[in-house]
Length: 76
Image (tube, one colour):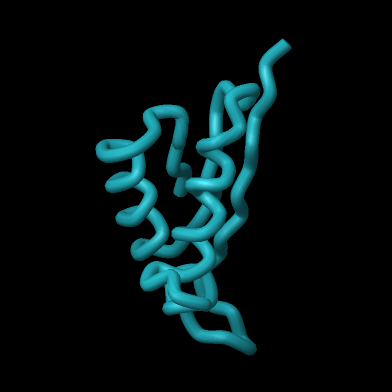
């Protein structure tokens, strides 16, 4: 059985600007930099899909695919 991880990271939060990519608790790329490596450690996941309309998230995800884990699939 395959398992799929999902990350929903929409742009345009009304409360916190750039909430997914702004610096957070020592992570310069924010929550995304925290969560993607955590998901990448889960060996049972066959795919990690990132659904977003945020260009900064798409850019970070593309870099993550090239440098760390090819299971990540950014979707616009």
